[in-house]
Image (tube, rainbow, N blue to C red):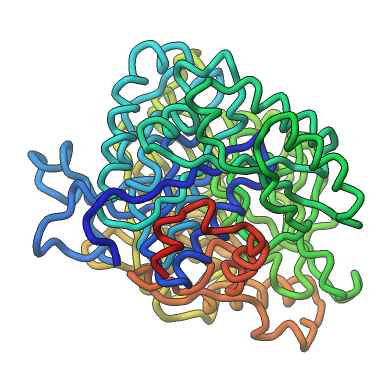
Length: 566
């Protein structure tokens, strides 16, 4: 148990982006937690459109409702709403790392989040609350000092409550052009008095050059904090590396603490690098051993500004289901269903859908269609006040939507962020499903019935979701074969995922493989203090696999006080 003193901080920094920092940090969180150490994740500044709704500790007061309730800024008194929203956003990696550590995720774990929205702008989120949209230059000139203060304060709160803080860096720690404003790496190393573990990826080649160059380019005070190197994603005979390891240790004076094998524990990817490039196709779930003739394909349009795409990962985990990210100009002939994911910029992605002809093809498509969050907005009749949402400057205030659902969405600067638990009475692609479903909302815009709601061309219109005090249409609506909802994490709920998969197989006229029934990973139940599973599309053993992956890293070097007391 933490004794109220300052925690040791391990900074997992990289020689480059995507070298495995998130996985190493999650594995260390699980290893330390399993050893009885009070541990918390931290990333001072993240850039990702894969976000989760979590509690804001700065808003928590004695007797306040727990985070699994629907409590959020616009349901509080107006005088309090602007100052103490109960929930905020963090990047998905810190959400996952908190689960690995066995703690509830809070905005202290990722106090500064930048969410790219196009046209060189990002939405700045500080302590979980959206501040505004800024170009990079404006952020660093006008807001970075405030962001740094927020990050240092968040780390200080974690350090008092824990024995160890596992901090994740961002990109490369050796970006010399950013050393005076590198919040996630250089500044974290300094204000956290961190021991730095340098992570280098051997799969991309040049691993020894990247280690040497990174160490030599570090500021002197940060270089002194580097306690070791972890080489990741290694396949083959480790003995072949020994001459290189000996040389790099002699040149830098930094030991190579471990060579970690290539493995994918199944944790969700943090950003769009895991997606195919715009205009390319990629398939998930095709390695399950089920033949193509017994499988179905769920097409996901590769929106230019896609966000929270991990929503579809639970579908790819079902044997016989292929999730195909497809270009916007791709035909839908090979698809059995379509899922439209979230988007950081609904208005501009709607323009992209229409320009590529995807909206026309979707209206002609006869299989099940589900829109999630921004995807729900896209499926409606129109977007109102679209100039608020768009990153462009053409002044357009109203856009015609795809038109498959009798709703319209009006945008404003307000944003809804909350974990939620709703009642499901399924319809359309979720027909037959009923019970509680849990997930979270992160969206701008209010969705309401359009003027022609009662005479929609699809016939019967249903509102499959219900929650106390909420307009059901603000939660989701179904019309015929089409359903839209604001519920991120819909398919993590067994009841919803199984109903949808059954509907897709039925629509395709294909018998569902017997081995698929009930075999996919699920995460039913509301979010709470205890991890319900790895969630966000990850198998339930992902944390333990991540811990096993980093088992060779010596904790007595990375966190000697915590390791030595156990």
